[in-house]
Structure formats: structure tokens, C-alpha cells
Image (cartoon, rainbow, N blue to C red; front, side, top):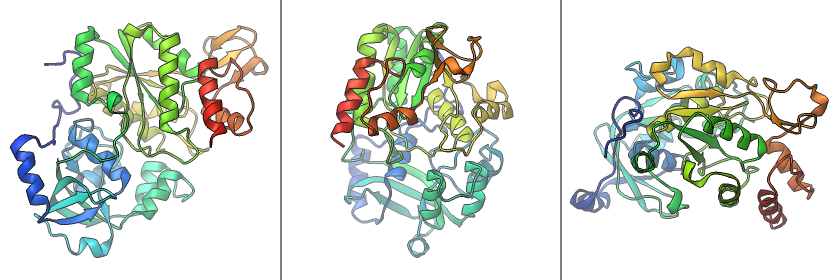
Length: 387
């Protein structure tokens, strides 16, 4: 079935998933191959490369793509790409890997996930990557911390998926780009807006989504369920919040819930570009970019994630970003608004954020209705009581 709304990034939806006899043969070969264990973050990347979410990537980046992405936010062929997708290994492990060699990639339980067709191995400058991608070399930044702790050698090459992770979650919502594209066609959606989140949806999020719904056919709520910070709300709790919100406050024929099994990088502006490209591959035509998208702490400016799109021509990114300012509840307007629509001074504004919600929950305080819907508040309160 062909999607008529938007082409994948690079023009073709990649598939590196082995099936049938080809998969059976690969599984037999895996036993004979040199194997290495890979992290949960790498496993997330493997899943997204293999199902086409990271099109046009067919594997982990080689040196030229890596250096071009870090330096210029483009692959070596000039296509926009903002986050390095790499396979790091320790130096002693890299010595046992030869270019042209097939390597079995195993999860932490020793189950084979994929075969890496090694093309090259190379060293890299971690501090340079931190400075360019994360805009800081501070090891307290969660993305930089992961970068500094990983191996000193990168292995590049295409991958072939043989198994999904054994502990895979949210199967009913874990749709591939091909599946979401087919679902959009079945629903008659030609203009689809995606919403990225790693938090429960509070009233400010809901406001942005419903504003966007006024100009498109459908909304894809697409939360990240891969690796996140330890103080983020757990994915299973968030899923229950999304379900009850859709059930009670959204037009069900215009909203779809699916999960993105990606790891958060907390790379702020660069990750906004990355998230937009991924949603383009899932078939979305529009993408919501709010305040401090994918940010953490005070590492990025409030609207840096808006401005970074100016580095590319609209046709290069392909998906249309919808830029929203910080939404809040205004006690004079008696409703949600932004500085673009509300004339009242800040003293009347109740600002909403995931951080503030977590603070209230940890303190076992009630969440006001201006913060979140009561059904969501109950789920969060119950969940935090058990932590």
C-alpha cells in the first residue's frame, strides 16, 4: 500500500528486517559469528534503523557520515541529519573486529538481535561531539554523560535484524512506519500532525495538540518509550495517562496513539530536527515543536529548537514544523493561552511543565485542574504513592 501524504526521508522507506528462510539461515549463522553485547540505547537504534524509522540509514554511521553530521548536521550526501547514530565499543573489543566481518549483536540476556556487516571502525573525539551536538561538554548533562561513558571506537556498517528485543513492551502500540502510514490511509488522513513527548500530557500539551488539530486531519500522539532519565515518569504510567485522556477528551476518530521505541538524547535543538525527521518517516506531514523541545536543565534557550530549522530549506526537512510558544493557564482569560493570544501580565499565568508536575507528585500534593485533567492526576498520584 502506497502512502500518498509524504515521502520518507531520502525518498525510500528502509527495511533491514530479515524474514522467512533468510532469517532462519541468519539465525543459524549467528551461532558461528563473533558476538558483542550492546546497550539498550543501541538496541533502540537497531529497531528504528531496521523498521525504517531512521530512513535513509541502513546501519550505524561510518566515519564520513559521522563527521559530517557532527560538523554540519548533514549526511555525507548532503541530506539533513542532526544526531550521530553510532555503535560504540571498547578498544579491546574493536581489536577483535575486522572490516568486512559479520558480527552478532546481542542484548543483555545474550539473545541475538541483529547482524552487523562491518564496513569500518574508527576513533572519534567525544568532547567535540558533546560540544557540537549537545552544545555543552558538561558531564552532568544526561546525553553527554552517556557519550563520555561509552566505548572509544565506533563501528560502522549495515545491519540485518533477526529478532526484536525479548523484553519488548507496548506491542499493541508499537507500530512501524509502514503500519502507521497504512493506518493513516485507511483513516483517510492526508495531513497528520505528530506530537513528541516523554511526559504525561498536561493541559498545555493538550492545548497545543488541539490547536494543531484545527488545521490537519489527524493527530499522532507518539511518546518515547526507550531509555529516559531516571526521574522521568515511567512509560507504563504515561501510557495509561494517554489512554484515559484520549478516551475522555479527544475525538477518537481523529487521534491515534503509537509509541516510539527511541532513547532520549536530551540534545535540545538538534533532537528537534531528529524527532521531526523520524515522524516524517512514520508518515506525518506536520510536527509540533514547543518550548525547549528535548531540552534538559538550562542548557538550551527557550526557543532554540524553533530557530534551528532556519538552517535548512523547508523542502529539505520535508515535514512542516508547527512552532508553539509556552502555553499556560490564564486566570483572567479563564483558559489556556500563550503570549501570542493572552494580553494579561505574568502574575495571572499558571505555567505548566512536566518538571513542576513531578515536584508536586513527589511532595504528595494535589495536582490542580489547571495543570492536568483529574483522570490523569489520579493515575499519577496513585503511581507515585507506590514508588
